[in-house]
Structures are given as C-alpha cells and as structure tokens.
Image 1: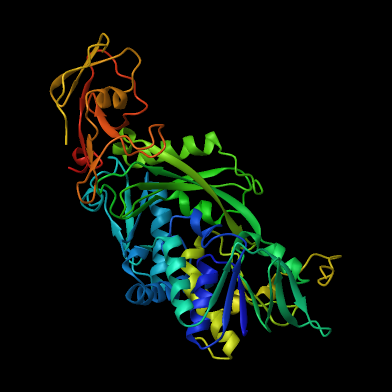
Image 2 (image 1 turned 45 degrees about the vertical axis):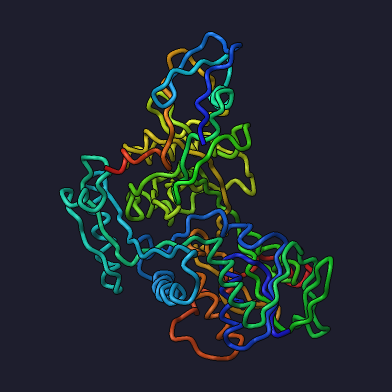
Length: 387
Length: 101
C-alpha cells in the first residue's frame, strides 16, 4: 500500500482521488461513514468572495478551477452550481469596507462587480429593501459536500482505492528509525510508508497517535434547513459582517447571515461561529440569531418554517490556514486538515498537492504557506511522546 | 383513488371542509385520522413526479402527509387536530408556489 488516508470527508476523498489517479495504491479509513464529520455538516461553500488576498485566496482560486473540472467528470448529483455570490451591505460604512476589500481582491485577479442598491433586486428579487448595495462574485459556487465526497471515493475506488468505513484508527505505527510503517484499526493492519491525516477537526488526535502535534481546534457552527421552497434565493447571499467573522479569532458567539437555496428545495441558513469544544447541544441563541438575521435579509423567509437545525465543528488552526504537507517530526506522515470553514472549497487543491508531494511531482501552485512545520509545538511538549 | 363515502355514523360534532366538501370528525381527532375515516388516503402530490401521498409514519417524522390548513401549507395532517370550521385542502408539491412570484 502506497498510502493510507485517514478521513473519508471531502478532503480525504480528494486526496484519495488524485493519488489513485496518479497510480498510487490507496486505502481510506474512517471511524464513521463517508462525510460523517465536518463535510456532512457544512453548506458546500466554494468561495473566493470571503477571502482576503493571500495564500488561501490563491489556493481557493486553484481549487475552484479544479472543482469545475471535477464537475465535468463526476455525476451531476454532486449538485455543483456556479451560482455566484452576492455580498450585501446594510449601510454606507459597510459598503465602503466591502469596496476596499473587493478592490484588493480584484487586484489579485478575482472577478467582482459592484451592484448598486437599485440593482440588488434584479439579482435577488426577495432581498429586503433599503440595503446600501453589494458586490457580485460570479466565481463563487456550491456543491453538495456529502455526495461530492462519496463520488470522489467511488472514482478513486474504480482506480483501485480501498475504503474501510466504521473502523477507527487505533495506532499509527513507525519503524525503529521513526518513519511511518502502517496504520492499525480494531479489524486490520494496513502497511504503508505514507499516511495522510485528513481527519478534519479530529486531526490533532491523529497527529498525537503518530507521535506528532497539530493544534486543530473545533469552531462550532449551526445551519438551519427550511422546508422545500420554490427558487427564492439565486446566489449565495451573505451580509458584510460575515467576512469579519470568518477572519476573527474570537471565542464568543458570532452570527452573520449566509443564505442560499439548494437544488432540492430547502434554503440553508448559516453562519454561526463559537469555540465551545465538541459540545453538540443546540444553542437557542445561535438559532434565534440566525433566523432573525436571515429574515432580515430575506423577509419572505419569515413565512416559512425551519424543518431542522444541525451543527458541525470547523477544524480551526490558530492562523486560520490549513495544514497541507509533510509533518515536521514524523517522516511519512502528511497533513491535509485544518481548513476551517473552507474545506469543501479547498479540498481538490489540497488533494492534488498531497498527491504531487507523494509522487515527487511539482505543483503549479504554492502550498508553502500551508506547511505544517509552521505550527511549532509548545515548549515542553515532546513531539514523540505519543509513542 | 378517493372514496367519497358518507361520514361514519359515530362521527362527532367537529366539522371541517376538505377540498370544498363538508367532512365530520370526532373531537380531538387528527386531520389524517379524520380523512382516513372517510376513506381518503392521499392528499398531497410529490414535488417531482406528482405522485400521491398521505399518512405514512403517522407520528410527525416523515413529512409525507403535508396538507394545507386554513391557507398554511406544509402542515402535518397526522399531528394537527381538526378544529371546527377548518378549511383543509390538498397540497401540490411544496405548496409554496405563491412565494416564488
């Protein structure tokens, strides 16, 4: 076995897909089902609009191009939609902040167009009146993340990849020299020289099992799902405050409305952020604030009902960048995790970069800024104390 | 498929309208129960394909028995009790076509 991927979410599936395409023999192991962690709890955001110029924006742009390619190859039920994003401002102050943000993005090559207050309703007829204006990002897209993960794994399987679900990794074994030698689950031993840690929010535990360290923390978010509706919301629509919330490191509850329709009919309403560990209890305050903010943007939603609420845990690293590449301490261990709320969007570029690193091929995009080596362990923690 | 049978003799004092006709129900009965009593087993069509649907789980979980009650679509007929004078109508698809216009 050339490679064992731990994690059957979108990121793990993309790693398996590109590695299998490159001719590597691959196994994917997950303690749960496909997309049973963070991938299944997201909205399928493929966004450039919320990213400031820098390495993550570059990775997102590369990844969006890869998603477009994948949409040609994978079945249509992954619901890839190049629907575009619309960021709206409530007042002049928000609008000038957005304008400055958009100008910097445009200099980095992002396509973005200002929409005056009069033009907003041509694009989104149900938006509330009185908004100051907004910005349209035609490159923003959406995908159904659980299906996308399943279809990527299916393709990888046709190229020979094996999938072991419901099997928790109990050990990452190493040679006497400290190189990765395999992975153990309760049911089997998989021998391999390379392990990819794509365990999302739980990636810190896998790093620890392998005798290394990665400070991935959970950042909880709720999503409200309405009853099925006719097409009311055409774009991914969100308020200016969302950009600041994404970039913030605050532990307290933050909510800003992100509203989008789905091909199946329900409207999805996010987004909340708070650092409360792995607490899955429903927060009435978060749900109430999301509902109020969404009906503030789209008053028509006040007439419809929310059928269910779910939460997930974004895998959060202290500098808001993912960890992509070789572990600094354990040869043969690679990380593909810590994408926070952008993992679905960044998955293909992450998977392709990992596959290229494993085969020694070059990438035409820079993953240097995501090198896990930047995340030094705190003093006193021996990187090998896990074994 | 609808049987337009007369109300059962023991039907109680609550009266409501289903798709324009008067239907009798027992006090406290669910809409689904009352419709079943009258041999009506389908009152919604699916969003894709327009196939008939009625009560399936009967306990509020499956959302198959959705019906329009006094103009509000998406009500679960198995959970909503009949009130005197209710106007109940079959639901086509999500019942929200009016919102999109």
